[in-house]
Length: 118
Ligand SMILES: [Zn+2]
Image 1 (tube, protein in one colour):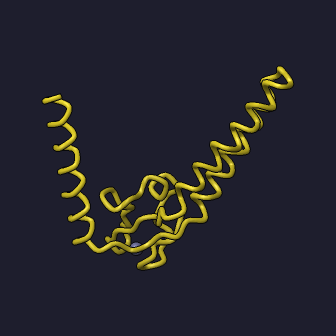
Image 2 (cartoon, helix red, strand yellow):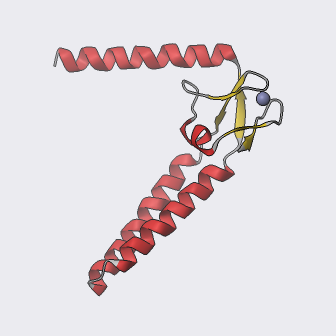
């Protein structure tokens, strides 16, 4: 469990932290506040994880064995979890969450309209 940035209670699970973003924030039951993991560097973690799998994948192909690839996936997964684990949770105001949700639903509606009238 992770500490809520508002009240410091250990109320946020790894899963909630991992999935959190402004339109779907992590919710603290203790102080009823919203927060999310700052993703400014989260994308880098994913790119590095993919690179690790690629390098181990080439090693697996060169050695004609599946083990290096499995090892690569395990290393990439451990690295990615460590990245998410080290992300800072930032508090979010209810107004910001509401705005983010409206923006996101508008994007989905626009995407749906684009798909229907394609
Ligand atoms: Zn809290």
